[in-house]
Image (cartoon, each protein chain N blue to C red):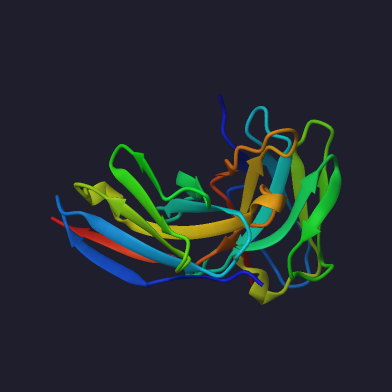
Length: 115
Length: 113
């Protein structure tokens, strides 16, 4: 059983460009959350998707947007990249229907470098 | 709002026990998590506890929760060099479980042979 998978693993962009990151949740999970982890810090919540809708959002500007597909996979899009967007972007998956077990699993992340 | 704090660094000798501490501020029912992150890697879920529990044990890992003081600890018995990593404490309110996790800044654990 594959866990949470993310792509690409590494990418380099320049300021002003746009980036799309992808995530496939663990089998059987229906929610996907995205986190930004700057170097030396804990992850910060960006937003969560469930039933193809954004359900909750952290303190991130509208340049950060996302999407969830019918197969529960998700994309994170960042427009007009800034140097400060350089970070490890982590995807987490879990359940959000019926009984919630509390389990939240993370992928290995996509490391974005903005030059 | 929620806030989670951890000490920055812990050094321990191989074979000894490690204790990593965390404090949180959310007063609602909540899930509390411990994640491990090795260099360049994602977050590995080690264990989690519901806030109505006092203790949870899983092989070498013991989680203790002091609800009154909002203090959570992770004890690693017989610490090995492979336990060297950054450990993150995190919490999420049960009413929105699975949604927003609030993380501490992480505790870097160094295991010396």
